[in-house]
Image (cartoon, rainbow, N blue to C red):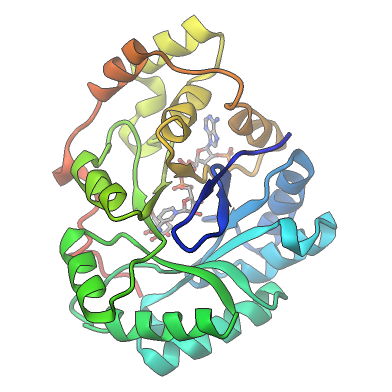
Length: 276
Ligand SMILES: NC(=O)C1=CN([C@@H]2O[C@H](COP(=O)(O)OP(=O)(O)OC[C@H]3O[C@@H](n4cnc5c(N)ncnc54)[C@H](OP(=O)(O)O)[C@@H]3O)[C@@H](O)[C@H]2O)C=CC1
Ligand SMILES: O=C1CO[C@H](CO)[C@@H](O)[C@@H]1O
């Protein structure tokens, strides 16, 4: 199956749907990535912190898919923030992945108390100029982090990967991002921790369309131009999660799903979150 793309501000197309790989280890991620590639996935989301980049690289190699067709994202962990450390970290990620470049490199969390995200981002701008990274972006950044990053570097990130599901719809943050041409990518898109898949509204809409609750929730993302990266180790669920481009939710469906939003305060606090 062919997965549609969205155009990043950097000029590069990014698939609207990809495979998440946390918390898969090397062995499990190699299997999951190879299976997803066989189904037509081309975007894979990993991170230095997931400690599975070797497995992701093995899965990509085993799939035999041309490098030019792939879209590989990895992330800079907190422990590696800083100008020189960021450069070293990207080289180490490329070695583990067995790649010459990644398509997207993200700062995993802002970690404002470290106060190193601006210099880390400057290193990423340089890595992009050197061709080691196609597009650069951030993850878990709020408006005030982005205001500062953009003011101090005069560079607008291509992507912000944020916790996002019908229960955490992040409408104000999404408007801020869209207004600046920053593509929104959602993590934990199925809202499992918030019980989204068992919400009666989701189940009713799924039944009405003859789809699964997971397909309805993932359709809710891509129908709004949000890049979504559901993780599944199961080839069956990988297939089902990708079969969302042949139906549409109605305006009434979207309005009913909007009622599930718990508001910004229910999302993980990017200022308090300290994960290195
Ligand atoms: N930037 C960041 O800080 C973060 C980034 N991420 C990224 O986002 C990705 C996705 O987020 P994640 O937290 O994994 O959450 P997901 O919303 O992708 O949920 C994954 C869980 O749901 C199960 N699942 C997958 N498909 C279905 C389905 N159709 N119906 C029912 N259950 C299903 C999976 O199990 P099974 O494998 O058995 O199918 C797994 O247990 C991560 O893998 C990671 O790459 C995640 C968290 C934070
Ligand atoms: O990327 C990540 C994977 O999931 C973890 C648990 O939700 C996150 O904390 C982490 O940032």
